[in-house]
Image 1 (spheres, rainbow, N blue to C red):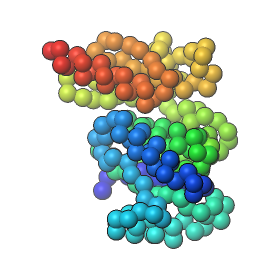
Image 2: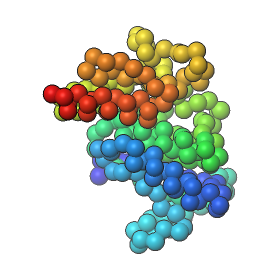
Image 3: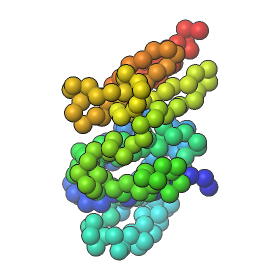
Image 4: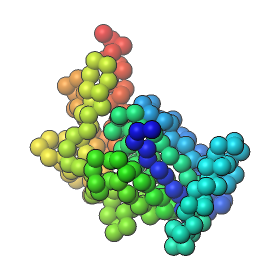
Length: 207
């Protein structure tokens, strides 16, 4: 099956269900995924696969539910060799955890970075209260596309001017990118990647 990321959502207030899933779908629709488009099933899912998947997820999560509370949603994403898909999923889930005050567990057992194989977000932060960016690597991530390679630089990237701390970014969430010799930065990974893709598509259109 290849690399698979497993997602579990805990502690979502029932009245937030529609807003949560709506936000999740909007964020997922902002980009093109090389692998699976992220999805989540819950107790109110109607298609048979989602219903059965969530039922089994609840059964297998009974021990964790003792400390985390009832399971609110669950899903998995199969990757197709694009590391930016894995990062985008992390940041989508961080946004949701932060916005709705939920606990979200992400299990990525085949991630080449050991500290990213198991990530728990509570209210958008790691268990020790640090920002998600604290455990990201400091090297660039490459998104290979026809005719170009987009270089994505995390907030703690070393040896790159656009990867250093900015005065208005105390938590160091801003990402930078390089595409076709053009450099820029944005307040988040999702925004930086979206801008890089706009530049990439615009230049291909002009060729």
